[in-house]
Each structure stands twice: as structure tokens, then as C-alpha cells.
Image (cartoon, rainbow, N blue to C red; front, side):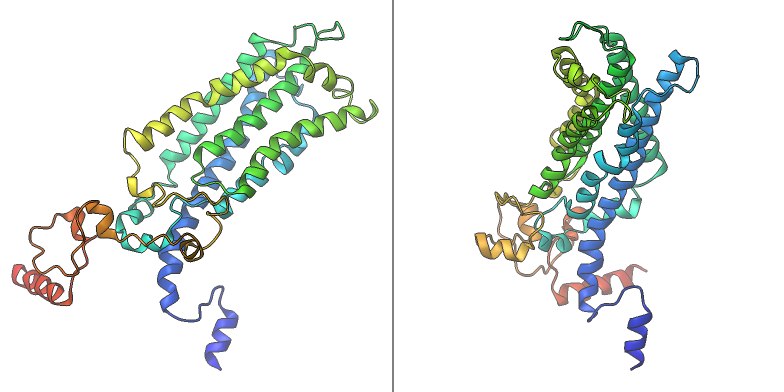
Length: 339
């Protein structure tokens, strides 16, 4: 009775203590990584939006003139960039086969050191947003500037620059999220790339309404989107903005080895729902054997069932080798003698 009352009053409750290990070590670690990415990304995408307005203020003498149309500005956080990060925050995992996480203690070092969320990483994301905002604004403003003559024989002007700048922002922040995400399920692809398409569909719909709804979008959307030059600067600006980030991320995973190789997926799955379905279900479906920790470290030699002498083991491999009960007692006795 008292236990039931305590469970009702608790924020979290588990049925058995044996569930606590997997809850903390597997799901807790995954949620920590997702939360760190979500927090940094939220500040990044909002700083990117604000900084482009700041660069524009240098040209309008801080008069309060907005670069963006009011409807697109209001829906930036609400519609165009909110759902992709929510999906990544729910489904993203750096290791699909979570059954092997408990055997790899090196995976917890990042959380202990606070690598995912710290002041240095936060400043790095903000500086990244400042640099990206400068690239987006100045490339579009000085590279195109809305001066190109469209199909109707008129120039776009400030309204066209604001429309292309906002569309580039939406595309850049979603592609930035795609670079930092570890896994992709079909639902993540749907909301990530769908948000970019929803932006252009939203602009077309708003532009079709009477001029009283939006004086900027009325007639301007069709002229800009049917003209090839804005599309050229759209893709060029995104490539210039995220090209360096893509190269750094690729080199970090493949050449610099700043991220352990064991974080890369332990087995290759062609199932698009692999990052959502439980590993046990996938293993039964594909009949993929579970990889032991010793097999990962040795790669070629078969792991022994017991370790009698651990004096020759290195600190990196001692944590990964299965140790028998007798070997543990010998280690404790040796530690007592040393003290």
C-alpha cells in the first residue's frame, strides 16, 4: 500500500530495479545527446534569423524596417523549423543496436565530461550562426539584390530580397539539422524536407490572397519563383553556408576520428524504420547476431570466455574484456596489497 502511494506521488516509477540499468544507460544516454542537440539547435536557428535582420539594419539606418514579410516571420519558428527538430529529438540515435551500449563504457565519457552541452560548444554554435547569417545576407544582397529583371519586366527590389533570404534561411537551418542528425527514419525525412516544401507552398497560397492580406506577397511570389536567378542564388547560398560544416563533420567522423568508430552503426540496416523499431525486433527479423564488446575490439580474434590473468591488459581493453569471478577477487586482493 505504501509502495503504491509512493509510486503515485513520484515523477517516474519503474516496476523492477533491473529496468533501471537500461533506462539510465541506454535511454538516458540517448536522451542526453538528443537534448544537447535540440538546445544548441534552437539557439542557432533563432540567432541566424535575428542576425540577418541585424545586418540589414546596417543598410536601413536602424529605422525599424523589416527585411521579412510578417506572415513568414511569424511562422518561422511555429511551422517551418519546429517539427524537424522535434522528430530528431524523439527518434535520433547514434547507435541502432542498443543492446551493445551496456558493454561499451567509453560511450558514457562524453556525458560525464559534459561534451554535449557546455559554454564552449554553445558559443561555437552562436558563432556559427553569426557566420552563416553574414554569408546568407551579403551573398543575396550584393550578389543579386533583387535587381534582376523577371518575366514581367520589373525588378524585385527589397521584397524579393526578403523572400529569397527567408527561403534560404528555412532551407539552411533544416539542412544544418540534417548534417548533425545521426539516423533518419522515414518520419524524419517527411518533416525535414517537407518543411522546406511547406514554406514555398505557404508563400504561393499567401500570394494568391488579396493584397489586403499581404502587400509584399501579392504578385511578388509568382514573379520571384518563376525567375531562374533567385533559384540559382538560393542553392548557391545554401551550399556556401553549409559546405564548410559538411566537410568538417565528414572529416571528424572519417579522418580525424574525433568520434569513436563504435558510435557508427554497429550493423547496416536497410529498414527505413530501423531507428524506431526495437533492436530485438530487428534482430529477429533479419537474424543478425548480437556483437559482443570483445569482438568489437579485437575484430579478428575470438573472445575468450574467461580472463584469468589481467595484468597484461591495457586500460582501454580492460573495461571491455569479460572478467571471471576469480579474476575479480585476485584484482581486489592485489589492490589491497598495493594500499
